[in-house]
Image 1 (cartoon, rainbow, N blue to C red):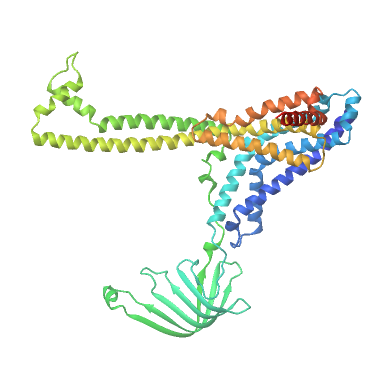
Image 2 (cartoon, rainbow, N blue to C red):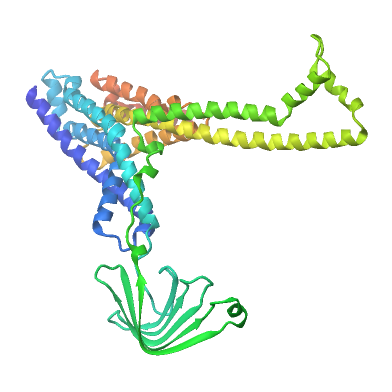
Length: 484
């Protein structure tokens, strides 16, 4: 029995690692394709790109791990069935349940590790990845001054180079517009030729220009604004230094991203939900007070009380109906206008409050969805294993052919249902507890049915029985067609 368990585990671990790496690679290539425009042409160092890919690959584990478990279980049991090792084990009196037992224990361990990863590691990976990705997106493109194109990425300057030699340093027909001083373009430098060199630390660009002219407008007093005097200086050689510190990679503080729900574990999400709920109730009470105060309820009620005490059978509406008789036509018209204006203001305030409450509710729902997601990953690993292992025993095909096709179909069903449930939750159609577990609730009976039928050696799990059933249906329809 121990040798059989070792055989099954060795047959399972290899495909599991292989399929997990393949799934991670595919998802990582999709990530690169999505953000290729933000990465190319910015002169990013390899360690920066390596960190981004490492943190991104960690965020893909919730999708890659269930797919790897499904495909590996299909391949393992299919390979054992294809080589008649399952038949030999059953002939020796070993049931399918005992054959699966080491894989079940391993899947339980993987599910526990997946929950720990989802709760502790994934929030940190999301924080690192999104903060680094934000900095990469904000990074300026690398210095690339092209011929005949106005270059504007250096702060305060616009540069145009008419021609560049093959050495990349010698430049000709140079224009430099200086916008560093208040008032706009007050200084222009024109040069026939020059050289362009970047310092070793890549923080300064040095232009050495030859045979040129500086055109400068002087604005030292009020008269210069109307007369606009200009100064023209010819030079044989001039050096201009451009600060390139803005091109260096600057990191944003991670504290700015820590309040996002994807960067929190279960304890932090629970505290955040309590805080959001308290703020929502406080805002609701504040709005109720503002609405009543804005409508003038307390003020009008105070005036009525000052006029005469209300009897026990008096209604507030009855006293308001007498106000018209106590006011002149002009006063009544003014009061009606003010009432209409107050009603419109209150209507706008209610609309703004409604939108604010809907936004707060969506944020609260996203926090609750993230809590449920911590558990769905570990359950998905178990669920897809109990679907993949029986299917592998039924298909009896190893390798990456048929198991890959079947696993992709099953995983697509699971993923589509999961995404549909999550979107329904975020739209407020379903509750977070129901929507996030919708895919598990739908596929769980299918997995239980497959496992029971396979462990009980039901004839429904034999390929021949399905072939015979298809032949019966075919024969039935042919007979019916002839009868017609």
